[in-house]
Image (tube, rainbow, N blue to C red; front, side, top):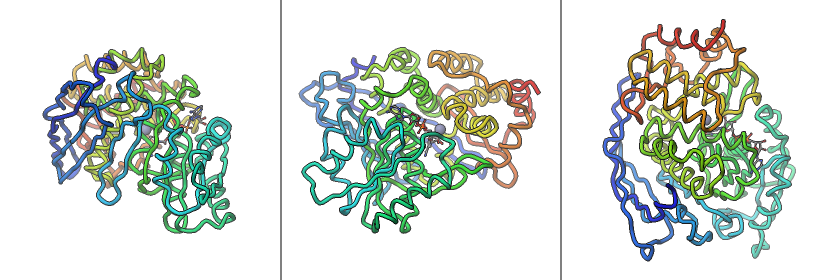
Length: 440
Ligand SMILES: NC(=O)c1ccc[n+]([C@@H]2O[C@H](COP(=O)([O-])OP(=O)(O)OC[C@H]3O[C@@H](n4cnc5c(N)ncnc54)[C@H](O)[C@@H]3O)[C@@H](O)[C@H]2O)c1
Ligand SMILES: [Zn+2]
Protein backbone atom coordinates (compact mmCIF):
# COMPACT_ATOMS: atom_id res chain seq x y z
CA UNK A 1 0.00 0.00 0.00
CA UNK A 2 0.90 3.59 -0.11
CA UNK A 3 3.46 3.77 2.64
CA UNK A 4 5.37 0.76 1.32
CA UNK A 5 6.28 2.74 -1.73
CA UNK A 6 7.79 5.66 0.10
CA UNK A 7 10.84 5.69 -2.07
CA UNK A 8 9.35 5.02 -5.44
CA UNK A 9 11.48 6.15 -8.29
CA UNK A 10 9.96 6.29 -11.71
CA UNK A 11 12.99 5.29 -13.63
CA UNK A 12 11.57 3.84 -16.79
CA UNK A 13 10.57 5.32 -20.08
CA UNK A 14 7.10 4.06 -20.75
CA UNK A 15 6.72 3.92 -24.49
CA UNK A 16 3.39 5.21 -25.58
CA UNK A 17 2.04 3.96 -28.84
CA UNK A 18 -0.45 6.39 -30.26
CA UNK A 19 -1.51 5.46 -33.73
CA UNK A 20 -4.16 7.52 -35.34
CA UNK A 21 -6.29 7.40 -38.42
CA UNK A 22 -8.83 10.02 -39.44
CA UNK A 23 -11.41 9.17 -36.82
CA UNK A 24 -9.74 6.62 -34.60
CA UNK A 25 -6.95 6.84 -32.11
CA UNK A 26 -5.64 3.82 -30.26
CA UNK A 27 -3.61 4.39 -27.14
CA UNK A 28 -1.53 1.72 -25.51
CA UNK A 29 1.12 1.86 -22.84
CA UNK A 30 3.60 -0.69 -24.15
CA UNK A 31 5.75 -1.10 -21.10
CA UNK A 32 4.59 0.10 -17.74
CA UNK A 33 6.88 2.25 -15.65
CA UNK A 34 9.26 0.18 -13.63
CA UNK A 35 9.48 0.95 -9.98
CA UNK A 36 12.71 0.84 -8.04
CA UNK A 37 13.34 1.35 -4.39
CA UNK A 38 16.05 3.63 -3.05
CA UNK A 39 17.47 4.11 0.39
CA UNK A 40 15.96 7.06 2.24
CA UNK A 41 19.26 8.90 2.12
CA UNK A 42 18.89 9.27 -1.62
CA UNK A 43 15.56 11.00 -1.38
CA UNK A 44 15.51 14.49 -2.79
CA UNK A 45 12.55 16.78 -3.26
CA UNK A 46 10.52 14.76 -5.70
CA UNK A 47 10.55 16.08 -9.17
CA UNK A 48 9.02 14.48 -12.19
CA UNK A 49 9.30 15.90 -15.60
CA UNK A 50 7.60 14.68 -18.69
CA UNK A 51 9.13 15.52 -22.02
CA UNK A 52 7.64 14.65 -25.32
CA UNK A 53 8.82 14.71 -28.90
CA UNK A 54 6.04 13.78 -31.31
CA UNK A 55 4.79 10.42 -30.06
CA UNK A 56 7.80 9.71 -27.86
CA UNK A 57 7.56 10.19 -24.18
CA UNK A 58 10.35 10.51 -21.68
CA UNK A 59 9.89 10.61 -17.94
CA UNK A 60 12.67 11.64 -15.62
CA UNK A 61 11.90 11.33 -11.99
CA UNK A 62 13.68 11.10 -8.69
CA UNK A 63 11.76 10.42 -5.52
CA UNK A 64 8.20 10.64 -4.30
CA UNK A 65 8.21 11.77 -0.68
CA UNK A 66 4.49 12.45 -0.96
CA UNK A 67 4.15 8.73 -0.16
CA UNK A 68 6.36 9.01 2.86
CA UNK A 69 4.40 9.70 6.01
CA UNK A 70 7.64 10.48 7.81
CA UNK A 71 8.91 12.90 5.17
CA UNK A 72 8.96 16.60 5.93
CA UNK A 73 5.60 18.14 5.07
CA UNK A 74 7.61 21.12 3.91
CA UNK A 75 8.84 19.25 0.86
CA UNK A 76 6.30 19.27 -1.92
CA UNK A 77 6.23 16.73 -4.67
CA UNK A 78 6.53 18.48 -8.01
CA UNK A 79 5.01 17.23 -11.24
CA UNK A 80 6.06 19.32 -14.22
CA UNK A 81 3.71 19.83 -17.12
CA UNK A 82 6.01 20.14 -20.12
CA UNK A 83 4.61 22.53 -22.70
CA UNK A 84 7.71 24.33 -23.90
CA UNK A 85 7.65 27.97 -22.83
CA UNK A 86 4.24 27.43 -21.23
CA UNK A 87 5.48 24.65 -18.93
CA UNK A 88 4.52 24.85 -15.29
CA UNK A 89 4.93 22.99 -12.00
CA UNK A 90 2.22 21.28 -9.95
CA UNK A 91 3.18 21.32 -6.27
CA UNK A 92 1.56 18.55 -4.22
CA UNK A 93 1.79 18.15 -0.47
CA UNK A 94 0.50 18.86 2.98
CA UNK A 95 0.72 22.33 4.51
CA UNK A 96 1.72 24.06 1.28
CA UNK A 97 -0.44 27.13 1.94
CA UNK A 98 1.88 27.78 4.87
CA UNK A 99 4.83 28.09 2.50
CA UNK A 100 4.39 31.59 1.02
CA UNK A 101 7.40 31.24 -1.22
CA UNK A 102 5.68 28.58 -3.34
CA UNK A 103 2.94 31.04 -4.27
CA UNK A 104 4.94 34.25 -4.35
CA UNK A 105 7.51 32.99 -6.84
CA UNK A 106 4.74 32.68 -9.46
CA UNK A 107 3.07 36.06 -8.94
CA UNK A 108 3.84 38.48 -11.73
CA UNK A 109 3.39 42.18 -11.10
CA UNK A 110 2.09 43.80 -7.92
CA UNK A 111 -1.63 43.16 -8.18
CA UNK A 112 -3.46 39.92 -7.46
CA UNK A 113 -7.14 39.07 -7.83
CA UNK A 114 -8.30 36.00 -5.94
CA UNK A 115 -11.43 34.43 -7.38
CA UNK A 116 -13.24 32.18 -4.93
CA UNK A 117 -16.74 31.38 -3.71
CA UNK A 118 -18.84 31.93 -0.61
CA UNK A 119 -18.15 28.43 0.78
CA UNK A 120 -14.38 28.48 0.37
CA UNK A 121 -13.76 32.13 1.30
CA UNK A 122 -14.44 31.68 5.04
CA UNK A 123 -12.22 28.58 5.09
CA UNK A 124 -9.14 29.60 3.10
CA UNK A 125 -9.24 33.18 1.79
CA UNK A 126 -7.35 34.75 4.71
CA UNK A 127 -4.74 32.05 4.56
CA UNK A 128 -4.13 32.61 0.86
CA UNK A 129 -4.03 36.41 1.26
CA UNK A 130 -1.48 35.96 4.03
CA UNK A 131 0.62 33.59 1.90
CA UNK A 132 0.62 36.11 -0.95
CA UNK A 133 1.46 39.17 1.15
CA UNK A 134 3.63 38.08 4.07
CA UNK A 135 7.10 39.59 3.65
CA UNK A 136 5.88 40.98 0.35
CA UNK A 137 4.48 44.48 1.11
CA UNK A 138 4.53 45.58 -2.52
CA UNK A 139 1.79 43.19 -3.51
CA UNK A 140 -1.84 44.19 -3.08
CA UNK A 141 -4.58 41.60 -3.19
CA UNK A 142 -8.21 42.03 -4.23
CA UNK A 143 -10.80 39.30 -4.19
CA UNK A 144 -14.14 38.49 -5.70
CA UNK A 145 -16.48 36.00 -4.04
CA UNK A 146 -18.86 34.23 -6.41
CA UNK A 147 -21.99 32.27 -5.51
CA UNK A 148 -21.28 28.55 -5.06
CA UNK A 149 -22.42 25.95 -7.56
CA UNK A 150 -22.25 24.53 -11.06
CA UNK A 151 -25.38 26.47 -11.95
CA UNK A 152 -23.44 29.70 -11.53
CA UNK A 153 -20.74 28.66 -13.99
CA UNK A 154 -22.17 30.99 -16.60
CA UNK A 155 -21.60 34.25 -18.43
CA UNK A 156 -23.60 36.40 -15.96
CA UNK A 157 -21.54 35.33 -12.98
CA UNK A 158 -18.28 35.47 -14.94
CA UNK A 159 -19.01 39.15 -15.57
CA UNK A 160 -18.61 39.79 -11.83
CA UNK A 161 -14.92 38.84 -12.16
CA UNK A 162 -14.42 41.31 -15.02
CA UNK A 163 -16.36 43.99 -13.09
CA UNK A 164 -14.04 43.58 -10.11
CA UNK A 165 -10.89 43.55 -12.24
CA UNK A 166 -11.89 46.67 -14.17
CA UNK A 167 -13.13 48.56 -11.09
CA UNK A 168 -9.84 47.72 -9.35
CA UNK A 169 -7.96 48.96 -12.45
CA UNK A 170 -5.93 45.81 -12.76
CA UNK A 171 -3.44 46.01 -15.57
CA UNK A 172 -1.87 43.36 -17.80
CA UNK A 173 0.76 42.48 -15.24
CA UNK A 174 -1.73 41.31 -12.65
CA UNK A 175 -2.20 37.70 -11.55
CA UNK A 176 -5.54 35.94 -11.08
CA UNK A 177 -5.64 33.22 -8.42
CA UNK A 178 -8.33 30.53 -8.57
CA UNK A 179 -9.10 29.34 -5.05
CA UNK A 180 -11.66 26.55 -5.07
CA UNK A 181 -12.93 23.52 -6.93
CA UNK A 182 -13.32 22.91 -10.64
CA UNK A 183 -16.08 25.48 -11.10
CA UNK A 184 -13.94 28.30 -9.74
CA UNK A 185 -10.83 27.02 -11.56
CA UNK A 186 -12.61 26.85 -14.91
CA UNK A 187 -14.22 30.27 -14.48
CA UNK A 188 -11.16 32.06 -13.15
CA UNK A 189 -9.02 30.50 -15.87
CA UNK A 190 -11.38 31.67 -18.57
CA UNK A 191 -11.54 35.14 -17.03
CA UNK A 192 -7.71 35.22 -16.97
CA UNK A 193 -7.59 34.09 -20.61
CA UNK A 194 -9.87 36.91 -21.71
CA UNK A 195 -9.18 39.84 -19.38
CA UNK A 196 -7.00 42.28 -21.33
CA UNK A 197 -6.52 39.39 -23.78
CA UNK A 198 -4.76 37.30 -21.16
CA UNK A 199 -3.22 37.75 -17.71
CA UNK A 200 -1.24 35.38 -15.48
CA UNK A 201 -3.06 32.95 -13.30
CA UNK A 202 -2.40 30.41 -10.57
CA UNK A 203 -4.59 27.49 -9.57
CA UNK A 204 -5.15 26.53 -5.93
CA UNK A 205 -7.56 23.61 -6.31
CA UNK A 206 -9.41 22.53 -3.16
CA UNK A 207 -11.47 19.49 -4.25
CA UNK A 208 -10.28 16.04 -5.33
CA UNK A 209 -11.88 16.69 -8.70
CA UNK A 210 -9.89 19.85 -9.27
CA UNK A 211 -6.67 18.47 -7.78
CA UNK A 212 -6.61 15.37 -9.97
CA UNK A 213 -8.09 16.80 -13.11
CA UNK A 214 -9.53 20.23 -13.77
CA UNK A 215 -6.64 22.39 -12.51
CA UNK A 216 -4.17 20.60 -14.77
CA UNK A 217 -4.03 21.03 -18.52
CA UNK A 218 -5.38 24.49 -19.21
CA UNK A 219 -8.97 23.82 -20.18
CA UNK A 220 -11.05 26.73 -18.95
CA UNK A 221 -14.62 27.76 -19.60
CA UNK A 222 -18.25 28.15 -18.66
CA UNK A 223 -21.55 26.40 -19.41
CA UNK A 224 -24.25 27.46 -21.83
CA UNK A 225 -27.94 26.71 -21.30
CA UNK A 226 -27.70 24.22 -24.18
CA UNK A 227 -24.62 22.37 -23.00
CA UNK A 228 -21.74 22.13 -20.57
CA UNK A 229 -18.41 23.86 -21.11
CA UNK A 230 -19.41 25.02 -24.59
CA UNK A 231 -17.66 28.38 -24.19
CA UNK A 232 -14.01 28.46 -23.18
CA UNK A 233 -10.34 28.63 -24.00
CA UNK A 234 -7.15 26.63 -23.62
CA UNK A 235 -5.13 28.69 -21.19
CA UNK A 236 -2.31 27.35 -19.01
CA UNK A 237 -1.63 28.56 -15.45
CA UNK A 238 1.75 29.69 -14.11
CA UNK A 239 1.57 27.00 -11.46
CA UNK A 240 -0.81 24.72 -9.58
CA UNK A 241 -0.57 24.51 -5.80
CA UNK A 242 -2.27 21.44 -4.28
CA UNK A 243 -2.40 21.58 -0.50
CA UNK A 244 -3.85 18.20 0.39
CA UNK A 245 -4.89 19.52 3.81
CA UNK A 246 -7.71 21.44 2.12
CA UNK A 247 -9.46 18.10 1.55
CA UNK A 248 -10.10 17.83 5.29
CA UNK A 249 -13.08 20.17 4.95
CA UNK A 250 -14.49 18.60 1.77
CA UNK A 251 -17.92 16.92 2.11
CA UNK A 252 -17.85 13.14 1.54
CA UNK A 253 -20.00 13.25 -1.58
CA UNK A 254 -17.56 15.67 -3.21
CA UNK A 255 -14.64 13.48 -2.20
CA UNK A 256 -16.20 10.45 -3.91
CA UNK A 257 -17.10 12.49 -7.00
CA UNK A 258 -13.41 13.25 -7.55
CA UNK A 259 -12.54 9.56 -7.39
CA UNK A 260 -14.52 9.00 -10.62
CA UNK A 261 -11.75 10.85 -12.48
CA UNK A 262 -9.06 8.91 -10.62
CA UNK A 263 -10.71 5.63 -11.66
CA UNK A 264 -10.89 6.96 -15.23
CA UNK A 265 -7.08 7.32 -15.46
CA UNK A 266 -6.65 3.69 -14.49
CA UNK A 267 -9.15 2.50 -17.07
CA UNK A 268 -7.89 4.50 -20.05
CA UNK A 269 -4.13 4.14 -19.62
CA UNK A 270 -2.81 2.87 -16.32
CA UNK A 271 -3.88 -0.67 -15.38
CA UNK A 272 -1.36 -0.77 -12.53
CA UNK A 273 -2.93 2.35 -10.99
CA UNK A 274 -6.41 0.81 -11.34
CA UNK A 275 -5.21 -2.29 -9.51
CA UNK A 276 -3.72 -0.09 -6.78
CA UNK A 277 -7.10 1.64 -6.45
CA UNK A 278 -8.92 -1.69 -6.14
CA UNK A 279 -6.75 -2.42 -3.10
CA UNK A 280 -6.82 1.11 -1.67
CA UNK A 281 -10.30 2.50 -2.32
CA UNK A 282 -11.17 1.99 1.33
CA UNK A 283 -8.12 4.03 2.39
CA UNK A 284 -9.04 6.75 -0.10
CA UNK A 285 -12.63 6.90 1.15
CA UNK A 286 -11.39 7.20 4.73
CA UNK A 287 -9.06 10.04 3.63
CA UNK A 288 -5.83 8.29 4.44
CA UNK A 289 -3.38 11.14 3.72
CA UNK A 290 -0.71 8.97 2.09
CA UNK A 291 -3.23 7.19 -0.13
CA UNK A 292 -4.82 10.51 -1.14
CA UNK A 293 -1.46 12.08 -1.93
CA UNK A 294 -0.43 9.09 -4.03
CA UNK A 295 -3.71 9.07 -5.98
CA UNK A 296 -3.38 12.81 -6.67
CA UNK A 297 0.23 12.52 -7.76
CA UNK A 298 -0.36 9.56 -10.05
CA UNK A 299 -3.44 11.24 -11.55
CA UNK A 300 -1.52 14.46 -12.21
CA UNK A 301 1.30 12.48 -13.81
CA UNK A 302 -1.14 10.73 -16.11
CA UNK A 303 -2.84 13.95 -17.04
CA UNK A 304 0.47 15.80 -17.51
CA UNK A 305 1.69 13.10 -19.89
CA UNK A 306 -1.44 13.27 -21.99
CA UNK A 307 -1.55 17.07 -22.06
CA UNK A 308 2.15 17.29 -22.99
CA UNK A 309 1.48 15.06 -25.99
CA UNK A 310 -1.78 16.64 -27.12
CA UNK A 311 -2.47 20.02 -25.54
CA UNK A 312 -5.26 21.08 -27.89
CA UNK A 313 -7.08 17.75 -27.99
CA UNK A 314 -6.46 16.61 -31.53
CA UNK A 315 -6.93 13.01 -30.44
CA UNK A 316 -5.10 11.54 -27.46
CA UNK A 317 -6.38 14.13 -24.97
CA UNK A 318 -9.96 13.24 -25.86
CA UNK A 319 -9.42 9.89 -24.13
CA UNK A 320 -9.54 11.77 -20.81
CA UNK A 321 -13.25 12.09 -21.52
CA UNK A 322 -14.10 8.44 -20.90
CA UNK A 323 -17.68 8.42 -19.60
CA UNK A 324 -18.05 12.16 -20.15
CA UNK A 325 -20.26 12.09 -23.27
CA UNK A 326 -22.90 10.07 -21.43
CA UNK A 327 -22.09 11.98 -18.24
CA UNK A 328 -22.56 15.41 -19.80
CA UNK A 329 -25.94 14.27 -21.13
CA UNK A 330 -26.91 13.38 -17.55
CA UNK A 331 -25.67 16.72 -16.19
CA UNK A 332 -27.44 18.72 -18.89
CA UNK A 333 -30.61 16.62 -19.09
CA UNK A 334 -31.00 16.38 -15.33
CA UNK A 335 -30.03 20.00 -14.59
CA UNK A 336 -26.56 21.24 -13.71
CA UNK A 337 -25.61 20.60 -10.13
CA UNK A 338 -28.27 18.03 -9.26
CA UNK A 339 -25.79 15.24 -9.80
CA UNK A 340 -22.16 16.09 -9.23
CA UNK A 341 -19.83 15.99 -12.23
CA UNK A 342 -18.02 12.87 -10.99
CA UNK A 343 -21.29 11.11 -10.22
CA UNK A 344 -22.47 11.70 -13.78
CA UNK A 345 -19.07 10.58 -15.11
CA UNK A 346 -19.25 7.40 -13.01
CA UNK A 347 -22.60 6.44 -14.57
CA UNK A 348 -21.16 7.44 -17.96
CA UNK A 349 -18.15 5.15 -17.48
CA UNK A 350 -20.52 2.25 -16.76
CA UNK A 351 -22.47 3.03 -19.96
CA UNK A 352 -19.27 3.27 -22.03
CA UNK A 353 -18.09 -0.04 -20.57
CA UNK A 354 -21.46 -1.64 -21.31
CA UNK A 355 -21.25 -0.48 -24.91
CA UNK A 356 -17.63 -1.64 -25.24
CA UNK A 357 -18.69 -5.07 -23.99
CA UNK A 358 -21.64 -5.21 -26.43
CA UNK A 359 -19.18 -4.47 -29.23
CA UNK A 360 -17.08 -7.42 -28.03
CA UNK A 361 -14.15 -5.13 -27.24
CA UNK A 362 -13.71 -5.94 -23.52
CA UNK A 363 -14.27 -8.95 -21.27
CA UNK A 364 -17.16 -9.04 -18.87
CA UNK A 365 -14.64 -9.20 -16.01
CA UNK A 366 -13.65 -5.57 -16.70
CA UNK A 367 -17.30 -4.51 -16.57
CA UNK A 368 -17.64 -6.27 -13.22
CA UNK A 369 -14.47 -4.69 -11.82
CA UNK A 370 -15.74 -1.23 -12.84
CA UNK A 371 -19.04 -1.84 -11.04
CA UNK A 372 -17.22 -3.04 -7.95
CA UNK A 373 -14.79 -0.16 -7.66
CA UNK A 374 -17.52 2.45 -8.24
CA UNK A 375 -19.65 0.84 -5.54
CA UNK A 376 -16.71 0.92 -3.15
CA UNK A 377 -16.41 4.62 -3.92
CA UNK A 378 -20.15 5.07 -3.26
CA UNK A 379 -20.61 6.31 -6.83
CA UNK A 380 -23.62 5.63 -9.10
CA UNK A 381 -23.49 2.73 -11.57
CA UNK A 382 -26.47 3.82 -13.68
CA UNK A 383 -28.01 7.13 -14.80
CA UNK A 384 -30.95 8.67 -12.93
CA UNK A 385 -34.23 6.87 -13.63
CA UNK A 386 -35.75 9.95 -15.20
CA UNK A 387 -33.25 10.01 -18.06
CA UNK A 388 -34.74 8.92 -21.39
CA UNK A 389 -33.12 7.74 -24.61
CA UNK A 390 -34.24 10.98 -26.28
CA UNK A 391 -32.66 13.10 -23.56
CA UNK A 392 -29.34 11.35 -24.12
CA UNK A 393 -29.58 11.66 -27.89
CA UNK A 394 -30.48 15.34 -27.97
CA UNK A 395 -27.62 16.36 -25.68
CA UNK A 396 -25.11 14.02 -27.32
CA UNK A 397 -25.91 15.58 -30.72
CA UNK A 398 -24.26 18.85 -29.64
CA UNK A 399 -21.28 17.13 -27.98
CA UNK A 400 -17.95 18.69 -28.91
CA UNK A 401 -16.75 15.30 -30.13
CA UNK A 402 -19.27 15.27 -32.98
CA UNK A 403 -17.31 15.64 -36.25
CA UNK A 404 -19.13 15.80 -39.59
CA UNK A 405 -22.31 14.61 -37.91
CA UNK A 406 -20.58 11.55 -36.46
CA UNK A 407 -20.46 11.10 -32.68
CA UNK A 408 -17.06 9.84 -31.60
CA UNK A 409 -16.81 8.10 -28.26
CA UNK A 410 -14.10 6.94 -25.91
CA UNK A 411 -14.60 3.22 -25.51
CA UNK A 412 -12.58 0.55 -23.77
CA UNK A 413 -10.87 -1.97 -26.00
CA UNK A 414 -8.53 -4.83 -25.15
CA UNK A 415 -6.99 -5.59 -21.75
CA UNK A 416 -7.53 -3.33 -18.73
CA UNK A 417 -5.93 0.10 -19.27
CA UNK A 418 -6.62 0.43 -23.00
CA UNK A 419 -9.11 2.61 -24.81
CA UNK A 420 -9.98 3.97 -28.25
CA UNK A 421 -11.41 7.30 -29.36
CA UNK A 422 -13.50 6.43 -32.37
CA UNK A 423 -16.55 7.09 -34.52
CA UNK A 424 -16.15 3.67 -36.06
CA UNK A 425 -18.54 1.49 -34.05
CA UNK A 426 -21.80 -0.32 -34.69
CA UNK A 427 -24.63 2.19 -34.03
CA UNK A 428 -26.76 -0.71 -32.80
CA UNK A 429 -24.53 -1.10 -29.75
CA UNK A 430 -25.10 2.55 -28.78
CA UNK A 431 -28.87 2.14 -29.19
CA UNK A 432 -28.83 -1.02 -27.10
CA UNK A 433 -26.82 0.62 -24.32
CA UNK A 434 -29.15 3.62 -24.19
CA UNK A 435 -32.21 1.34 -24.05
CA UNK A 436 -30.59 -0.89 -21.43
CA UNK A 437 -30.11 2.09 -19.08
CA UNK A 438 -33.31 4.06 -19.78
CA UNK A 439 -36.89 3.03 -19.11
CA UNK A 440 -38.20 4.97 -22.11
N1 LIG B 1 -11.08 22.08 -16.94
C1 LIG B 1 -11.08 20.76 -16.91
O1 LIG B 1 -10.23 20.11 -17.52
C2 LIG B 1 -12.11 20.06 -16.09
C3 LIG B 1 -11.95 18.71 -15.79
C4 LIG B 1 -12.88 18.11 -14.92
C5 LIG B 1 -13.92 18.86 -14.40
N2 LIG B 1 -14.06 20.17 -14.75
C6 LIG B 1 -15.13 20.98 -14.21
O2 LIG B 1 -15.01 21.02 -12.79
C7 LIG B 1 -16.29 21.25 -12.22
C8 LIG B 1 -16.49 20.32 -11.06
O3 LIG B 1 -15.49 20.59 -10.12
P1 LIG B 1 -15.66 20.22 -8.58
O4 LIG B 1 -16.12 18.81 -8.52
O5 LIG B 1 -14.42 20.61 -7.90
O6 LIG B 1 -16.92 21.09 -8.12
P2 LIG B 1 -17.05 22.52 -7.38
O7 LIG B 1 -16.06 23.46 -7.84
O8 LIG B 1 -18.48 22.89 -7.53
O9 LIG B 1 -16.78 22.18 -5.85
C9 LIG B 1 -17.62 21.29 -5.18
C10 LIG B 1 -18.18 21.87 -3.88
O10 LIG B 1 -17.21 21.77 -2.86
C11 LIG B 1 -17.01 23.05 -2.27
N3 LIG B 1 -15.62 23.06 -1.87
C12 LIG B 1 -14.54 23.19 -2.66
N4 LIG B 1 -13.43 23.00 -1.96
C13 LIG B 1 -13.80 22.76 -0.68
C14 LIG B 1 -13.09 22.48 0.51
N5 LIG B 1 -11.77 22.34 0.50
N6 LIG B 1 -13.79 22.32 1.64
C15 LIG B 1 -15.15 22.40 1.63
N7 LIG B 1 -15.88 22.64 0.54
C16 LIG B 1 -15.20 22.81 -0.61
C17 LIG B 1 -17.38 24.01 -3.35
O11 LIG B 1 -17.70 25.28 -2.83
C18 LIG B 1 -18.57 23.32 -3.97
O12 LIG B 1 -19.71 23.51 -3.16
C19 LIG B 1 -17.28 21.07 -13.34
O13 LIG B 1 -17.75 22.33 -13.72
C20 LIG B 1 -16.49 20.43 -14.46
O14 LIG B 1 -16.98 20.77 -15.74
C21 LIG B 1 -13.17 20.78 -15.57
ZN1 LIG C 1 -14.43 15.30 -15.81
